[in-house]
Image (cartoon, helix red, strand yellow):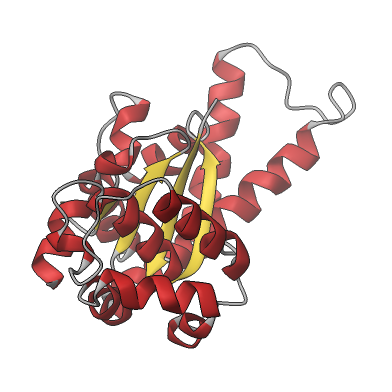
Amino acid sequence: MADVTLHLVDGQRFNRMASMPLGEIISGMEGRSLRELRPQGDPRFQREFDVDLEGDFLELIDSRSDWEQNMPPAGLRKGSCEIGLIVAKWCSYAHWSCWEARLFLYVEPILPREVSSTEDFTKPEVWEEFSSKIAQTDMASYSESVILDWMSRREALGETMEPSDDPRILPTMESHKMLSESLFSFIDHSRRSGDPILIGREYLDPAEWYLGGARIAESMAVSS
């Protein structure tokens, strides 16, 4: 089961990097000088390491010889999505991920409808709706609704809720509580800051990732 991944992106820094000539970005990645452009990481969350993103970017550059280095990433005829995805991750200051099947437990309790498929979790619409709903509640109430919904789902399947019968009950409950609270904090911070969320999942084509309400290529075109 693939992880759905969300990144909080500093929109101003992303716009700045997406408008830089490709050659300038390459030099900055090679010399590690672009680390000064990365936003401060949010200590409540993890994010990808500088050295890993630098390596991914330079490996991508080495695989292509047809890119004009005086052009910004959005001006490239091909490959702009791959570069844009790395640039967006570079400008991210928080990362949240979860098995896509588990997300039904965290998203559906607060929505007035069921989520039709896991594909919905890679689209901005469901997260915009989720964000508007958590704005109307608090973290404790939201987390409690997740736990109660999870318990009712187990009972509907005939599963026990007695810790003496299943020692995994309490650790699983604590895991749902921790993940739901961190998701609340993540989405709430995005709503309050106005910073866009980079949305995707493992093995998803870079062209299919969203930044804010638009695909990554469209976001770069706007920024340039």
